[in-house]
Amino acid sequence: MRVSILSLLPFALALASFANAHVDYDHSLSARDYLDELSVASLERRELLGDLTTRELIEELSERLDRRGGQTFTCPYTDTGCTKVFTTLQAFEKHLKYHFEAGHKPPGKK
Image (spheres, rainbow, N blue to C red):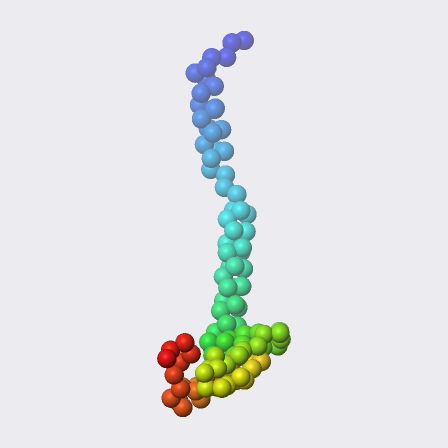
Protein backbone atom coordinates (compact mmCIF):
# COMPACT_ATOMS: atom_id res chain seq x y z
CA MET A 1 0.00 0.00 0.00
CA ARG A 2 1.34 3.32 -1.04
CA VAL A 3 0.75 6.50 0.94
CA SER A 4 1.18 9.65 -1.01
CA ILE A 5 2.60 12.79 0.49
CA LEU A 6 -0.46 14.74 -0.60
CA SER A 7 -2.71 12.60 1.58
CA LEU A 8 -0.46 13.12 4.64
CA LEU A 9 -0.30 16.88 4.18
CA PRO A 10 -3.77 17.70 5.65
CA PHE A 11 -3.09 15.39 8.61
CA ALA A 12 0.27 17.10 9.30
CA LEU A 13 -1.28 20.58 9.07
CA ALA A 14 -4.10 19.63 11.44
CA LEU A 15 -1.62 18.20 13.93
CA ALA A 16 0.57 21.32 13.72
CA SER A 17 -2.36 23.69 14.30
CA PHE A 18 -3.51 21.59 17.27
CA ALA A 19 -0.03 21.75 18.81
CA ASN A 20 0.11 25.54 18.37
CA ALA A 21 -3.34 26.03 19.86
CA HIS A 22 -2.40 24.42 23.17
CA VAL A 23 -1.20 27.10 25.63
CA ASP A 24 0.30 26.41 29.01
CA TYR A 25 -1.12 28.99 31.41
CA ASP A 26 0.90 27.86 34.41
CA HIS A 27 4.02 29.71 33.31
CA SER A 28 2.28 33.03 32.83
CA LEU A 29 0.44 32.73 36.15
CA SER A 30 3.58 31.86 38.07
CA ALA A 31 5.35 34.81 36.43
CA ARG A 32 2.51 37.09 37.54
CA ASP A 33 2.69 35.72 41.08
CA TYR A 34 6.44 36.33 41.14
CA LEU A 35 5.99 39.92 39.96
CA ASP A 36 3.31 40.46 42.59
CA GLU A 37 5.69 39.22 45.28
CA LEU A 38 8.39 41.59 44.07
CA SER A 39 6.08 44.59 44.08
CA VAL A 40 4.78 43.74 47.57
CA ALA A 41 8.34 43.44 48.89
CA SER A 42 9.34 46.78 47.39
CA LEU A 43 6.22 48.44 48.83
CA GLU A 44 7.05 47.09 52.28
CA ARG A 45 10.57 48.52 52.00
CA ARG A 46 9.19 51.87 50.86
CA GLU A 47 6.81 51.97 53.82
CA LEU A 48 9.64 51.25 56.24
CA LEU A 49 11.90 53.90 54.73
CA GLY A 50 9.02 56.33 54.32
CA ASP A 51 8.57 56.49 58.09
CA LEU A 52 12.15 57.67 58.55
CA THR A 53 13.21 61.21 57.85
CA THR A 54 16.59 62.19 56.48
CA ARG A 55 17.45 63.85 59.76
CA GLU A 56 16.73 60.65 61.71
CA LEU A 57 18.88 58.62 59.32
CA ILE A 58 21.80 61.03 59.62
CA GLU A 59 21.51 61.14 63.42
CA GLU A 60 21.49 57.35 63.64
CA LEU A 61 24.52 57.06 61.37
CA SER A 62 26.34 59.74 63.36
CA GLU A 63 25.63 57.92 66.62
CA ARG A 64 26.89 54.65 65.20
CA LEU A 65 30.08 56.29 63.98
CA ASP A 66 30.58 57.90 67.38
CA ARG A 67 30.13 54.54 69.13
CA ARG A 68 32.89 53.01 67.04
CA GLY A 69 35.35 54.92 69.13
CA GLY A 70 38.96 55.62 68.42
CA GLN A 71 38.21 58.66 66.28
CA THR A 72 38.96 62.03 67.83
CA PHE A 73 38.56 65.55 66.52
CA THR A 74 41.20 68.15 67.40
CA CYS A 75 40.43 71.85 67.27
CA PRO A 76 42.31 73.44 64.36
CA TYR A 77 42.36 76.89 66.03
CA THR A 78 45.77 76.38 67.62
CA ASP A 79 46.70 80.02 66.88
CA THR A 80 44.27 81.11 69.61
CA GLY A 81 45.75 78.62 72.09
CA CYS A 82 42.94 76.09 71.83
CA THR A 83 44.07 72.49 72.34
CA LYS A 84 40.71 70.81 72.86
CA VAL A 85 40.07 67.27 71.60
CA PHE A 86 36.56 65.94 71.00
CA THR A 87 35.25 62.39 70.70
CA THR A 88 31.97 63.28 68.99
CA LEU A 89 31.42 65.17 65.78
CA GLN A 90 28.51 67.14 67.24
CA ALA A 91 30.63 68.55 70.06
CA PHE A 92 33.43 69.37 67.62
CA GLU A 93 31.06 71.24 65.29
CA LYS A 94 29.59 73.15 68.23
CA HIS A 95 33.09 74.17 69.29
CA LEU A 96 33.97 75.33 65.76
CA LYS A 97 30.81 77.43 65.76
CA TYR A 98 32.06 79.09 68.96
CA HIS A 99 35.33 80.09 67.25
CA PHE A 100 33.45 81.39 64.22
CA GLU A 101 31.08 83.49 66.34
CA ALA A 102 33.99 84.80 68.42
CA GLY A 103 35.52 86.18 65.22
CA HIS A 104 38.66 84.10 65.26
CA LYS A 105 40.46 83.83 61.96
CA PRO A 106 40.16 80.44 60.24
CA PRO A 107 43.21 78.19 60.65
CA GLY A 108 45.91 78.71 58.05
CA LYS A 109 44.93 82.35 57.33
CA LYS A 110 46.93 85.20 58.77
